[in-house]
Image 1 (tube, rainbow, N blue to C red):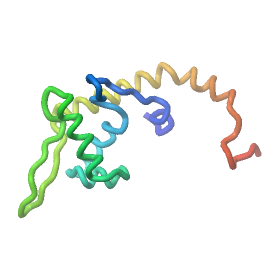
Image 2: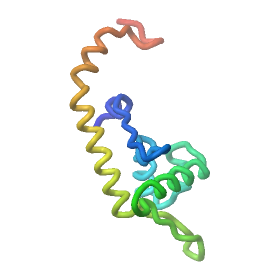
Image 3: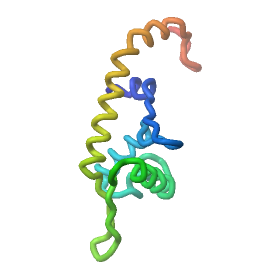
Image 4: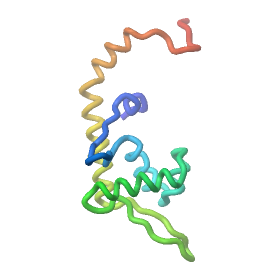
Length: 124
């Protein structure tokens, strides 16, 4: 999915009063998978450790089992890993985004014909 598509297609998967998954949570899971750390993933995404931890905690509470498993620090340090369920959740979420983008892309292109030029970028 292209960067513009990610901006346009924002799907939230509700679970009671919370969202089990949304674009930011999917990005966070991917960053945790890449970095092996909640704090490093948060830094990569420009969020505090506390914010990243709260999002992970909320996701873990929403799913039938943890989507992120953590290990305490020690000689080798702590870390985090996205579980198989977490990887499956991200895969399915990204597939939903792709389906939604495929459905709305023609209409978005039609709508964009109504728009002017972005501020600071006059027509040449």
